[in-house]
Image (tube, rainbow, N blue to C red):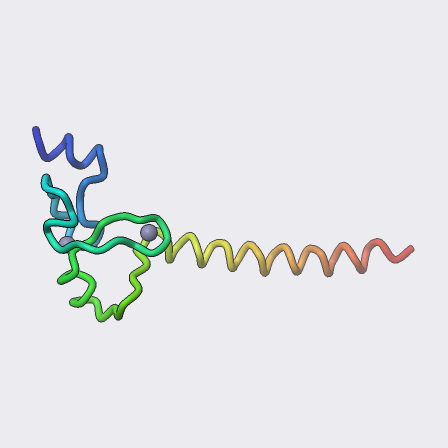
Length: 85
Ligand SMILES: [Zn+2]
Ligand SMILES: [Zn+2]
């Protein structure tokens, strides 16, 4: 039960999905530079991240934003073509 509660609070490392119930600082965990989610330092190192860590969620969001920006740019270009009357 305690695990479920911790999961709901998002008190788990998004890489190994292990819950923690102590202060993450005390466990030597580090945060995602974007959403401040705590992850194990070992987990980051196992993935080959250097000093700055960005979690999977944020990477996906960033990619989506990039795609969205490209789409918007395309739409602007299209709109520009259309608005030439
Ligand atoms: Zn971990
Ligand atoms: Zn993040």
